[in-house]
Length: 114
Length: 114
Image 1 (cartoon, rainbow over the protein chains, first blue to last red):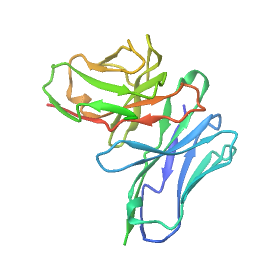
Image 2 (cartoon, chains in turn blue, green):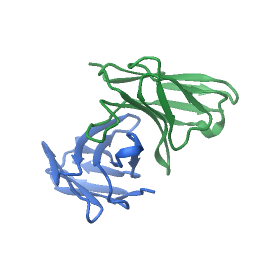
Image 3 (cartoon, one colour):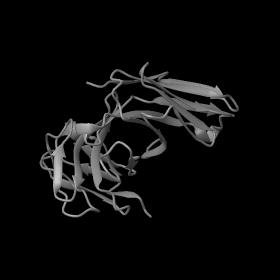
């Protein structure tokens, strides 16, 4: 059974720092990995989707990488801003007969202070 | 496009009452699913549908029913509410259950069962 772990559970940084959020998974037979952002009391906003055939994806100040062999994905946020404060979730998709099921990590709570 | 919409935003039920959580999407997505989010448990899949008329159980289906008569709508029914069903419920959709496609989430319904 796939298990997804996110480290650290919480992170507090000053504005302007570059930071890395980590996501590890136990079963490397994943088809893709998706990163989400969740603001307090809100839904999940998709940030990046990395296919298993890709090594990384970029969107603005965000860069996500995927290393299936080591069972790891990282989300890199450049020049962090207070508006980046949120919970960041990663989710793996096993493909095949999992029929779209996402397995989520517990999330990293990010606080960027001015 | 409105994306994925959910109603109501908040609901309080008494034990034993029934209700339906509504979910709709206007992106012509084949795949729709329901998750619940609980502290310490993360997001867990309740039911999913790979197309109109086709539904199946996820990880935690007990106490919930679904049906999918149209592509756009995927309601979740609580048959006899229990305090253990107090949670935040999210509906998600994707173009297909295939792992190539990003999944989009609604804003959530916060349910309290007393």
